[in-house]
Length: 393
Image 1: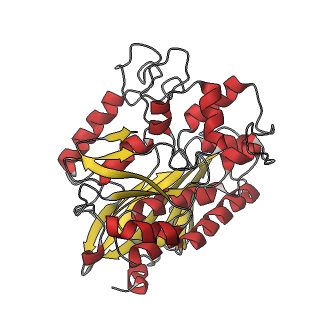
Image 2: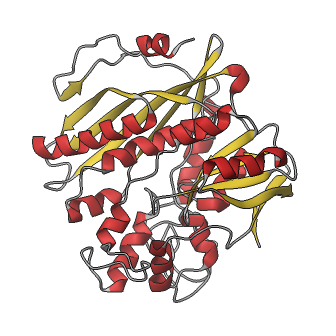
């Protein structure tokens, strides 16, 4: 099925509801996903340091109630047990959930779908006044997810919600979305702007994005062929991307610095903390599709909330884990600063942030050297081992 035929399915016009502003043609139908996926978007933590700042202190604790020291997710007002229970109930209705993107079979192809947001990085956008790049973040979070199946993004839609519509501000945000779509090789096909008086603070807004792509059924990447000894290759991130900002904001408060201050320890480069934190998420689509086209790629992990520790195992068959060679890639100065100021444990960093690697490829031994050379910069960060989980050496 060609990309044009798939896009044709997405472009039938619909009537706009009176309470919202509809941009562009959208299909009104909802489709069931017989092979779809769902995930709970929470950051992860495992620190036991009493005086160190963890994601639990910032209001996120994946191990609710399991640590003797420090705040728990429940203490911060968020109950991970309730989230787990919700997913359990949803699985009764939709037992196929659980991965990076949802797969919908259509003739010889899979349509791959994903949805995501930008999270509390938007709080920094409000404080810095940097609104023209959060749209790139929005696109990146979804298209990078569907990329893990080997899918080429085809179309993107957005949801922009605010209490009082500031047209100039919204235009900046949507310009970023269009830019992100260009980077991903897809099109902004439509969206919705919801004006909800009294719902958001003055000058604030929220974003959601929805991406669809396609991959031929016999070319889908699902990790089933991964074996012990396969190599893990990391592609560099541009910065914090769009995860862990609940913790980032707490570290910033503790540091006593402002977003307009220079980022400490930044290799002599003149960059403010705000600029470093607001650097848009890398969109890996064109680079990774080129790598995939030459063979050897068995699995892909988008390193978002949960970091290395929770995201890499999602692509492995049962009984396999990862050995990560710490020090094998460049950790960006912003992460060193966050860890130093927050006194954050190494394990906590690896379960909260991308640490300078935003996409991990699982490849055959035979293809590893070629891919590293052609994808430069790229890092051999580890290998697949027998067992479960991620082990750092």
